[in-house]
Amino acid sequence: MSPMPALQHQPDPERKALDWFSRLRRFQCDEALRQSFAMWCETSANASAYAELERYIEGSAATSTWIGAPRPLSNWPDSSTCGSMTCSGTG
Image (cartoon, rainbow, N blue to C red; front, top):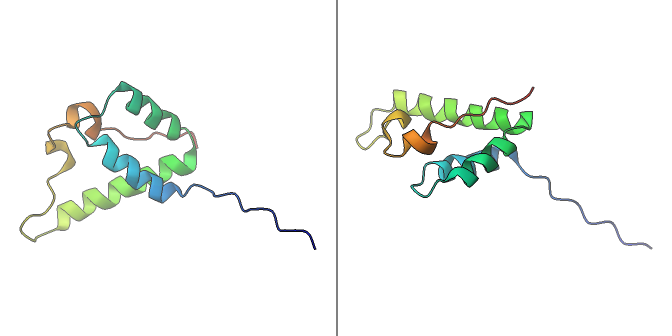
């Protein structure tokens, strides 16, 4: 009996979008990171996952009424460099 081939791990666009969302809002965001993000967004599944995450987070922040609700993304200290990044996608 021959062994089964190892399954190739397929990256989860939703999980990776959350990772990018977090990484782009750090103060260490630099041009290389922004370029990597832009390349990742060239895949339409990735761009869609990131856009969906942004819509969800922005919608949650707008409807949240509890004290300590997240600040709107436009008010983040680093929004001028990375916080305003969005994916345009190609599909």
